[in-house]
Amino acid sequence: MPFGCLALRDGRTYNSLSDVTDKYEIGQVLKAKEFCELCLVKERQTDKVYVCKKFLKKDGRKVRKAAKNEIMILKMVKHPNILQLIDAFETRKEFFIIQELATGGDVFDWILDQGNYTERDAANVIRQVLEAVAYLHSLNIVHRNLKLENLMYYRESNHNKVVLRDFYLSRFENGSITEPCGTPEYLAPEVVARHRYGRPVDCWAVGVIMYILLSGNPPFYDETEEENTDMHNRIIFCRIVAGEFEFDSPYWDEISPAAKELVCKLMEVDPMLRITAQDALLHGWIAGNGASEKNLKEGVCAQFEKNFAKAKWRVRGIYYHTQQSCTTCQVPLVTVLITLLENGTINNRITDKDSTVKIVMPNKASYAVWLLLTVSSIVQFEFQLVLHSLRQISRLNIHHSVTCMCMKSCPCVCVRKDQSGPFEERERERERERERER
Image (cartoon, rainbow, N blue to C red; front, side):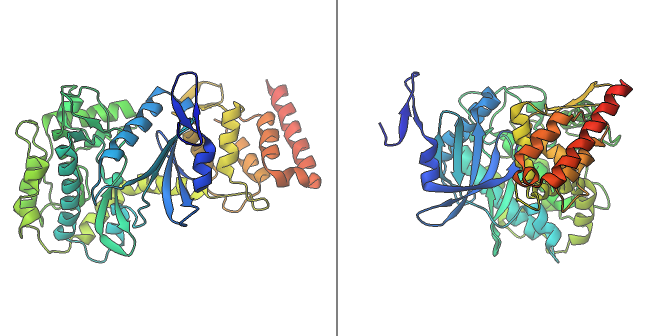
């Protein structure tokens, strides 16, 4: 049995948490994703910094499956355009996946920051994505979640190397896959139609990425701007299955015929006729001189801002607000909120005035982030001010017990009795007023 591991009654061998902390210094949570939390870790022996994904087993079977899946896939792959696995641990309660840290930012930000952006730049990105995809397909691996958000530049000082991340949805193509998954706008027709599918779905997603990089627009969109998510997805899915995309003017007027041809080959509705990643690498737009050198910056960036900036702002907002702390004791607000959710003091249901459930957040971390964004106007704050602001939001049922719990979670508030006492009294008075109104 390996040193530092635990043998449990189920016969399996687990790492202890000290196996992780003895080797790595774990930093604060940077971002909460669908299945995991992201944080930076520093290897104690070398001082090298990596990124760590932490999956909590208690979050359900899907989370456990995603973690095991990603570890299994990453142990097999080694390619310059894929973030490499450094270490992996499984304790009784968590999975830890340590990977290379990409510091160059995502492709979206890079395009917005450039003074000059051409088809050749887009071709350089697509070429590297296709090389990674062709490598995965040679191992019979289907990524299943290719999208612009999963592409990053490896180093800030060198924006030539693009790397692919997030393999928790990846699968081996042992026979055909039927389970639908992925990001709606990037799904291939066979996935939407719930047919059996395989590696060609990744090539379709590369086509969607290429379309966006060249025009700033998604190929499939909802003209009605339907706010209902299910209805919005239905409209997009109908267009995907029919292969209804166009090279709209003026966005595609300056794009080369070779680029349009490759987009059509990648986004062929019939997966049997769709171009493979290996063949796409031989296409003239990638391998030859088919890509134009004309500056597309103005048109593409304007459409980027229109179609993607709002969602991107939300992501940046989440990252920014997770860094905010009490100005006195530096306890991160997100840590306090997640603690409250863990204790059951706050649940993950957002309600209106009559306590009717309007939204059920998928997990504790996303709800904590939602709470943080509701106080986005507060940059420097004490916890009392934050809680006071939260209490004013009518659709949140935050009671006095939450206030007390949050104040206990922030050491500096309890120390300063001259401030916390009057504040608690005001909270009790508000609670009494609400009781009288009922």
